Length: 587
Picture 1 (cartoon, rainbow, N blue to C red):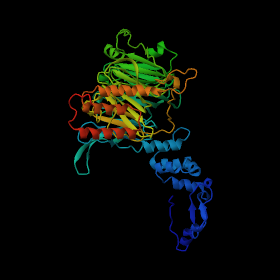
Picture 2 (tube, rainbow, N blue to C red; picture 1 turned 180 degrees about the horizontal axis):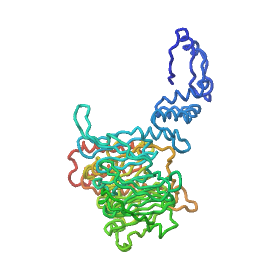
Picture 3 (cartoon, one colour; picture 1 turned 180 degrees about the vertical axis):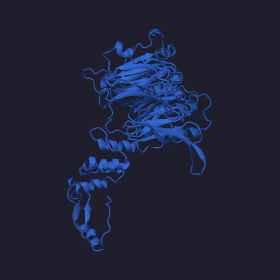
Picture 4 (tube, rainbow, N blue to C red; picture 1 turned 120 degrees about the horizontal axis):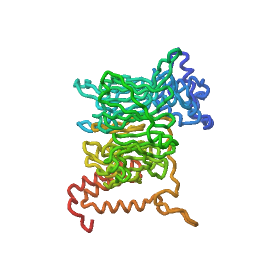
C-alpha cells in the first residue's frame, strides 16, 4: 500500500529507509526472523498508525481496490468497512452530495450507488452496434429508474431529482457533426416520487411526462407555515416545459403512478402508501391549452370491491392493468376484448360493461415482480421461477413453440432473473450466472435488430450479442434502441427462496425408504426432448442452429455457454454447404 511521501531533509531519509511497515495481519502470526531479515530493520505494524490516518489513505483508492483490500484480512476488512472511509469516498465521487441518505450503512450505500450508476444503450440500426454510455449527471445520487420517450431519456435518482437527458448534435473527435443520444442533461424537477408516460412500447406516442411529486403548499388563511402535498405535474417531453399541474389533499400520500387508456380518455392510476388505488381521467389533447378545470379523484374498483387487499405495485399498458398485492397475489384489469382473448384464450368471462372488474390469476407461489407487454405478460415468483402468459405468435413467451397460453406457464430453463421486460412481440430477461457475470436473453420477433445476433427471432430465450454492464439492474427496449440501467444498492438483497424438494419438477414424492431422486429437476427428460428436437431438423445447418438454442436453454455458466456457441460456429463454418439435403440414415 503506497503511503504519501513528504519532502524531508536528507538526514531523515536514511532513518526512513531503515524502517519497514508490516502489512500482514497480526492474526497471521509473527514474521520469521532469519538470515534474510538481516539489514532490514525492525518491522512496524500498520496497526500502530492512527486509525484516522489509515482511513484517510485508504479513501484515495478506487472503490474496486477498497473492496479487494477489505477481503485480505480481518483488520483491513474492519478498516475498509468503516463509515469514515466511505464518507470520504462518497464526497470524492459526488462532491455536491450533502446528505448521506438512509439505511443501516448510509455512506457506504451512497458511495456504491454513485460509483455504479450508469445508463447504457445500444442502437439497433446503423453501422455502430456497440454499447454506449450516456452522460452522467454530477448532481445525481445514484439511478433509481429511467424512461425513454420520443426524443429524450428521463432518469430519477434516489434523492428525488428527475433529470432530463437530451439528444443533441455534437462535434466528434474528427470534427464531424453527429447526432448523439443522451449527451446533455438538465434538472427537470426535484421532490419527485415517480413518473410515467404513454404505456405503449412505441416511444413516438410518449408526448407528455407525468411526474408524481411532493410540493410545499401555503397554509390556509389564518394559519402560519406550509404543508407538504402530493401533486401530479405534466411536462412536454420535447422541451421539458410544464403544461399542467393538479394538487391533492395533504392527507393523501401516493407512491406510484401509471397510465392506461387512449389520449382522449387517459386514466391516471395512483397507488397510496396504504395500498389503495385511486384514478382520475384527463384529456391529453387539451393539456397544452391555457385553462384550468377540476378533475375527480375516485377510488378504483379493485380497492372498492376488495378492500382487504393491499396493493404493493402496479404495471399497465394501453388496455390492461396488473396489480401485485403485498401477499404476492396478482389481479388483472383488461379493457378490450382483443387483448382479453390473447391473454386468456377466450371471451367467456369478459364483460364489456364492467371492464374494471379485477380478475385473479391462479399461481402456485407468491409473485415478486412482473412485466406487461401489449398482449402477453411475464411473472417472477419468490422461488425465481418465470411464468409467461398470452399471445405467442412470434414465440415471445419463450416456451419453445408458438402456441398461445391462456394461463401462466413456467419457462423451466430460466430461473432467478434480475429483470424481466415484455414488449410488443418480444421479451427480454436479464440474468446472472454463478460466476456473477450477467447476460441478456431474448425471444420472440427479431425484426429490426431487436434481438441482436438473432435476426430471425427465436421461440426460446437465447443469449443476445450484447455486452451487459456488471451492475445492470433493469432494462427497456424501444423501436430504435436497447437501454440498460446500471446501479447497485447494497440494501437490496435477493429475495428469492430455495424451492422445496417436493415441489421441484421431476422430483418424485418422498416415500418410505426412498433414496436420492434419480432425476432431480427432470434433466434427463429435458435432454431427451432436446435430442428429439435436433433429430427433427431436416438439415445439418438447422441442427446446428437448434443446438445453439438448446445451449442457451441449459443451466450452464456464461463461460461454458460462450465456449459451446463458439465451437458450434466453428463447426458450422467448417461444414460450409454440407448437409443441405435431407439427413441420411448414417447421420
